[in-house]
Amino acid sequence: MGSSFSTNPTPQEHSLSLALVQYDTQKANAAIQHTNSDFVDPHCLVNTLLPGDMIQKKGNFILQWFYSHFAIYIGNGEIVHATIPNNQMYGKCFIARAIMVNEFSSELVRKNNHLDNAVGFQIQPLHHIVQTARGQVGQPWDYNFITHNCEHFTTWCRYGREVSLQSWGIGDLISGKISLGEYVAHSVYSIKEKATTFWSWFKRKTVGIYYSIG
Image (cartoon, rainbow, N blue to C red):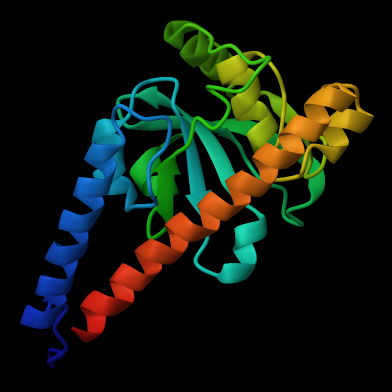
């Protein structure tokens, strides 16, 4: 006997989906000429990216404001990133290549080339960024949230230097990756980065709630 359950969206669900797609598409397109975008659905962002862009993935909970996952976009809808150990803090992992919309399904993402205008950082040629990322696929990565995380991998590919703003640069100073002067500057960058990350994520979640009850 067949089930009467239907997976077809209701008119309200269809309207909600369309409204969010329109919002996400507008936000993604607006960021084409900028270093970053607001958080949107990956399906809307992927066609606005250039190979070599850094992608920031945000989780669905406020506590995850303190941590984001980063990847390098290499074109054709693909990313390269350092996978995360099971304990999410440290351990051996690998550099992986994946389809962006599959890897970040049901998550919010944004373009975030956050050090493009920072003193002491130079954007590598885009083909070099992609070549560097592709060349690391399958290689082991000794993951440490403070000193060697996924953001370190993406900044190394894009700028030739490993830096993580989400870990406040403390590990980078201790390990000699940045100077004391850079650490002070990066502390300011880190505060700004966390504020913009939270605000962008909060806006998108609020829009989703608004359309769901509207």
